[in-house]
Each structure stands twice: as C-alpha cells, then as structure tokens.
Length: 182
Image (cartoon, rainbow, N blue to C red; front, side, top):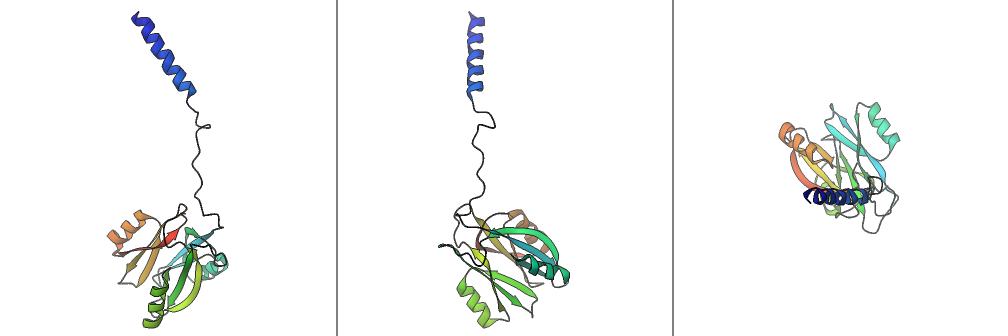
C-alpha cells in the first residue's frame, strides 16, 4: 500500500513537471519599450584635462571630441532624436560653460533659463527628447555634481552614482529626466 501511494505521488509529480512549460515555451522578457518612438544612443565621453563629461547622439560630433582628448565611455542611455517629438517627451537642453569647461543637461526649461541668464552657460542646442516622468519602461537619468572640479555627470546606473559620491566626492542632484536604459 505504501509503495503504491509513493508510486502514485511520483507519477503525479512527473505529470505536473512534464506539463509545465519548457524554457522555450515560457513567456520571454519583452524588450525595453520605447513608447513606439525611435530612439538613438546617447553617447558619453570624458576629458581628464577639461574635467568634463560630454554627451551627444551625433557620432560625428563625438568623433570631434575624441580627437580633442576626450575618451569614449560608451552609451549612457537611449533618447528620442532631436527631430522626433513625442506628445509626452520634453527637450533635453544642452548648455556649455567655457569658464567652467562643463557641459550641462536639463529637461527643465526654467532651470535652463535661470542658468542662461545668471551664469556663464550658453545654449548648445537640444541633445534630444526625454520624458519628464517615468513611462514606457524608462529609467531615471540621474545627475551628480563635483563642485571641486565643476563637473556635471549623468548616468542611469545607480552603482555608478554610489561610486562617484563615495569615492570621488560628487553630490547626488537627483533625477534630470527619464530615458530608455542602456
């Protein structure tokens, strides 16, 4: 009796296991949604001599910066190109200060206007479009700042923020916008 109960239990477990979907039948993770709009890579580079991080979606522009001593650091995120507006997306404004040798990016028009009127920053156009709120699988695009060297740095990588804050003295300035992850 005990043997037949064990056999029935084992047979039942085998039937359940074989009825479960195999790895190929299981739902596959979706690719990161982009709200249906095309995205482009936001490239990142660093200049030790200028103590400046630079971001662009334009490879030719990036190549010019690389020829002037910047070092490519890969793709920071994916954003909407500057010629593709989505109903809920906002411009990612790019500014530059020759005095501080710093590129600064913001999705906040008021922040941009204050910097342009009260500092040495000048408009450097629109890098692309981003989201002001998290939607369609976007992730935070964080800004951290090093006051000692005057560098604004942007990343989607929380571990990178911890490293820069803990080891390099940067200050976490919060979320600038939401972007598609790298």
